[in-house]
Image (cartoon, rainbow, N blue to C red; front, side, top):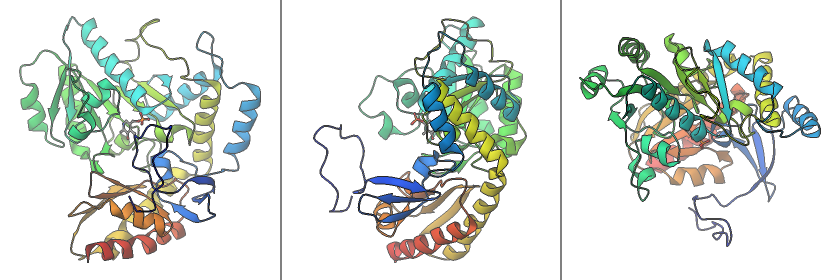
Length: 397
Ligand SMILES: *Cc1c(COP(=O)(O)O)cnc(C)c1O
């Protein structure tokens, strides 16, 4: 952190390395801080603010809902759950949804589904395949599924029942599970986010789908970060033409309202019965309205197309501008989920970009990550390049 960093709060737990600014309001892809300084938002609240800030259609819808009913509890039917579930089913080709509030909760639900899927078949100690560099959240179970020792350090004993394999290597997956009758599911991100923007190859996704069919495993895809239109399809795995059995969602689903969902296909939709899973806040009318309106507005404004086109433009411009620059390893990703990998740790770029008026993040120590709102324009993409490229070149010089 820069030496202007604010002192640690006396009362808020010290769990984040925060930048020394506080944001007060936003408009579109711009946000302002307490001093009046304006920033271009290349982070979107970490792939959350799908519609940017102060969206003229989302804000009145949420205001209307706040005045009607914020929360009612799952003791009763919540019509918004029916509407949003039907929409997610329609977009995914799956059949049922369960609603919660965050990504890790959606992943917890997926892990519980996989375990009960096994128990229902008489497997007493079910095992789930997970991946190197994966990130699935910070609860005890989801940090155990995560493939980052830093996330796990200090929180053992970890939850057991995970088998870890490398990405994009079908032979390694077959070898790691050979002759093991306890495997019940394969669980991964289509494009790893926190792990450094590492995509699964489409061919690999098709191979895993095939293997899951042959062996009666659940294919569970964590689309918490790469889903909800970010790559130019509703869900990133759709580029491979496959349908998973279980799909956790969160982040961009409510454009800033806390919301998570686990969507299930026919093989997983009826594993849970009454009493098997639940949440107090999950699926409340306000969060449902945010999800419904986010999807409606995305459809009305063709934001999938925008993410694909502006993302492709941003990626190719970055590739062009950074071509031959010593220390730049790769510009990768899809749509508006892009990573620029450098050959060294580059956390300081976060501070330098912030000072220059651009919000972004650095993941896996050396990957600059851009996950802006899906309303980003080509001109704003060019502005990101104009601010970021000189910073990267100076850093590497
Ligand atoms: C952010 C993220 C999570 C965790 O979501 P929270 O809402 O922070 O619990 C899980 N999986 C992936 C892929 C993520 O990017």
